[in-house]
Length: 411
Image 1 (tube, rainbow, N blue to C red):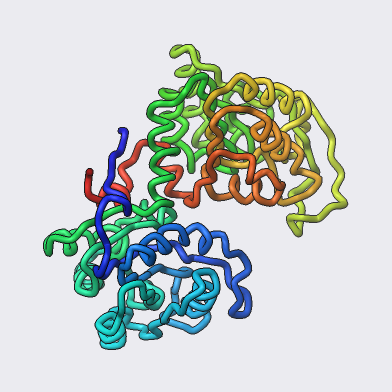
Image 2: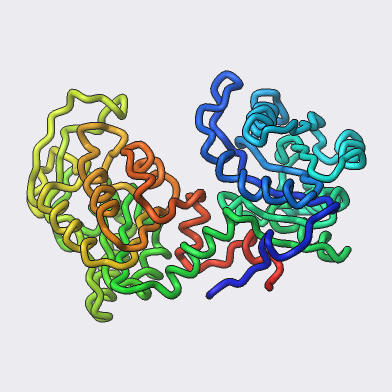
């Protein structure tokens, strides 16, 4: 699946109107941005186009926008922060229609090196591509604003939305380039190509709450990796499949047979599938989630009391997983080992993050809660790559064709 997509380095953008789909879906509190990671991640691509003398038109969604356009989900604060980061004015188009007369006029007035940011793409109505929901018309109007298109929004790349993939059809029709930005290129290089052609031993670590969320990725990774490590809430369905009692632990009864199949597949294919050998148990799930005064006990995985629930991997499991990671040359990690948001139940997740930080392997963190955990625990700068997409990174690991990636031109 080695992907060789046209990048922002592969065409001359001078004097051309370049529409860049970014991921500015940042957390806001009372109109203030509380985490600017996604803005920082977009800067290299934007700066490259500005330096090349392009007319840079930025677009993104923000939030779910379930009840129609509202100022609480406007991209205005992003334009302000971008202006500070770029050291130049980023003109914001407030128009809720996104591609209306204001946007058209602003683009017509642009000079080389100028940057404008369009309003939240979801204000336009659903971005989905059904014609009756104005998806294709919206894509066509976005294409009319530009000469070339660059997708740098990996977090949205698994969605076949107007501003993510459909727009490329109309840009290509008029002879424009459809490329990926630096952020997308990095995701393709690490997640796509590293999983397809990993340096071995290749260890995959899967955690999180539900087996159902990771059905396909478990199956796919068992074909590709040498060792698959299971932790988090999903581990208890595997333990049940081994015939163990799991007490009040998270359990998906409908997936017990699937877990049996996966264990059989691992054995048949000569792959190691590691499950917890001990677990940290609690009486009930903490409320609030970060409640610190909770009682815990450590028990072997086959001795979970009927009135308790597992909430983290135990010390013996930590040692087992650390040992598996030590000899690895490629590690992909998606999903925490326990209720990492609680300081009492974060030890397993922290130990895995620490083990990854100390290895010389290529370490790839697959977005979502794993990325949050690594950032929160202070190990982010020790990882080779932290994916910016939760759902997108999982689908990429499954081997799915992400619309936002495949819509770009091949080199």
